[in-house]
Image (cartoon, rainbow, N blue to C red; front, side, top):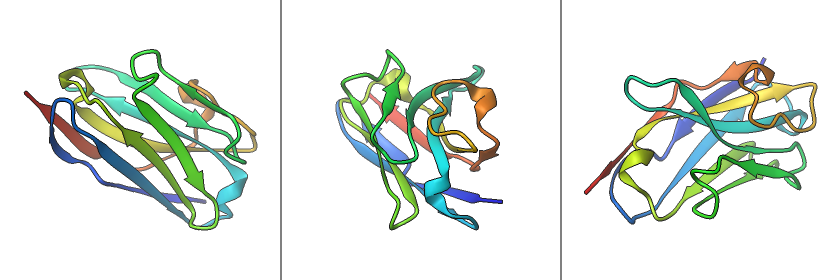
Amino acid sequence: QVQLVESGGGYVQAGGSLRLSCAASGRTFSQYAMGWFRQAPGKERDFVAAISRSGLSTSYADSVKGRFTISRDNAKNTVYLQMNSLKLEDTAVYYCAAAEGIYFAGPNYNNYGHWGKGTLVTVSS
C-alpha cells in the first residue's frame, strides 16, 4: 500500500506559478506510474498529467499542455507538477494518484488505485 500526500497548493494571481509536490510512502515509489488530476467546484475529476515509472514518458491534458510540467524524483519518492501561466480556470483541488503494476497509466482514471487527499489551488484575477 502506498500513501500519497500532496502539498504546494495555495492562492496565486493569474499568470503566476506554483509547484505541487506529492510525497509517497509505504512501498517502492519507482514501482508506481503516477498522475495528477483535478476537480473544480461542481465538476468531475479531470486528468491533468501523467508520468511513467522511469519518468521518461509523460502526457498532458490539452488544457495544460505547454504550461504544466510533471516530473518525478524516485530517490525522494516524490512527483511534482510545475504549473506556469496559471489561469482562472485552473482553480481546483489537485489530486496525486498512483498506479501499480503498469509502466504508464496515462489519463485513464480507472488505472489509478491510490489517491491523495488533494491540495487546493486558487487562481485569482
